Length: 450
Image (cartoon, rainbow, N blue to C red; front, side, top):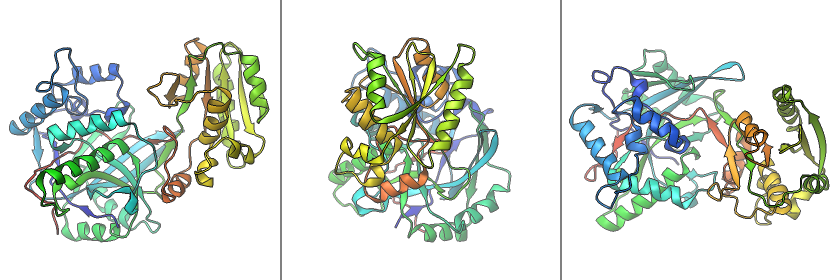
């Protein structure tokens, strides 16, 4: 079902760039303004100049961050800072990282994937997107005609057929090996053996692909493809603009980690904590975990441990209220409660998500927050539990809610229902590294068939 192709990847030239770490960056959507400045100053050829260029007061249609990205890209190619492979390849991509004290390895591969509309069921999303972010990625693609980083997707491979092929290459010395700021090691190898490429292509031809990260880039690519179809008329589907770089890893892999994204709330006028607690107790059993200032980290650790223990049998959500030295463990009294507040047109699996329980009952019904987007300003979406707690403990925000990670099996079930997860429901870790591999979209070329 998924049509993948080898391609001539573009990489930084190791003969020119002595320290690859200095030219790499995380994906654009996790880079803060402070991080953007840091990556700009780290190296004059850092990929930040391509994926998330600076904006200036005098910017206009002919001189803006997208135009500057295109000029950097073409200049770096021209002067050999970036090199394009001579032959089309697939690429093995391994990430080595620590999670809860354990060293984990995630193994996958990079290819071109032929774009498919979601309603065809070959490529499925799992998360809602924001129009503003899609337009940003679309404009970058319009101007630069390139994919500067990869979309992250997962597929099922119960017998680990593809992994066995990839492991042959991962035993060799990697072509590129980089350790990022989170101490994640990123290794890249070429798969240039045509037999192995054909075997992977054939295996993937009856797989459904689920997008884990990169929904905005994928939807922007669909829009870009449609614009190019209208512009050039003679569309066959084989054009390079009908493809994107996709990183693919199997669901069964032990190195696939999904973290929760916690919710921190602010700017609620006249919030009465006592009334809020009573309203919550109508729907949830509440267990308090009190703490002193010195004992706060231990109390938070206990909360998260209790949440993890409870998640197999019941909905468990953590809460911290401003001005109260306690964490609260919230357990939904009955599952049918959420049906009163969740959307009727959503499948059962969607209504049973912890994030749905939190948003439907507490954030929407009790707190009355209707606009729950990250751009509204009332809800901050924060991955790190310590950072989320600090926002409340320092008096910057009014309350925080802590969630268990969503199971990959839930994500797949919901995607198969042609449904999307609520916004900011999952954080796949580790993130892919931007700058590791790119491709140029030549308008007169087609995807390489073997």
